[in-house]
Length: 365
Image 1 (cartoon, one colour):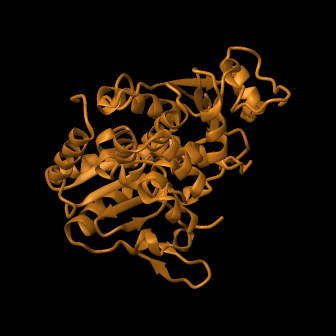
Image 2 (cartoon, rainbow, N blue to C red):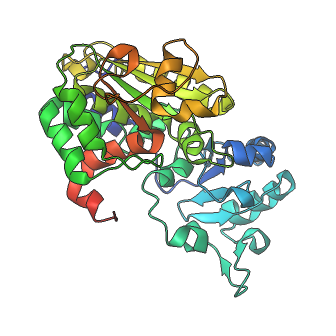
Image 3 (cartoon, rainbow, N blue to C red):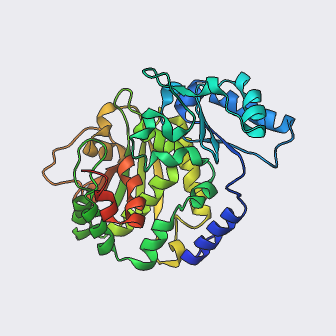
């Protein structure tokens, strides 16, 4: 990877990646999130690669393991592009038929389609499945399109363009104001306006400040943060870097459950790849802005999902909540102004910067 030393160089690399990819080339995307892996997705991915090789289609078909698109109960989920044909509960023994029928003959394997339990109607395309139809999948919707272990896939869908926009043409005040106007709220449950939190830290007089991703998803059965960290870690990194720039922080932390080994693996790899491109580290995109990110694994204490307990644990002490006489965005990690937001909150930031606050407010409250 060549270091990207300007927004223009980033855009050139993006266009070069896209020039090597024909959107009409058949692409088999197999969910490789934790849920589908538990259902045998790794074996399905291996079967697809073996079958593609067996039939001599390596040059004609792209096969990749991707992030979680949702609908985990029907995994492993397979989506075939460009048609967006969606097969559910795919097994290794189904793979030869899919390649022969769908990839080569452009025919549908009916038995692998979603069947509406009420009407009996089948849904051929992912967007026709009722589970998906009424959702605004602005964040998780990209998961099935990208390999989370390949930064080029994120760049191909416009990744880090929001960061380039911020560093090349927006002041920190403008970034904070855009987030304030969007009315983005904490997506972990608290619902506190993110822009107000950012503004408090930005206006604090301390020179040292921190931004933190709360990925200590301890609620039984909760899966939102995990799906994003595993499936599209760069979206979180991009939001975090933008947040750091906005408040005047040069250091970010991702506090993640160690019970999420795949999430830890993918986000750690994402950081290394972003560093190699010069999107994390010194003088990002020749802007003069420096920023580093550290991954910290929690030890499984449920209480560390609470902001002050999380910060206490980051400091290397027992994760216990502390009285909030002063908000943590004024006095948080090591007594310094600290913005802590949920995984999903950070992932929304690049979308808001690229599409504008008005776009975000139209989605809902």
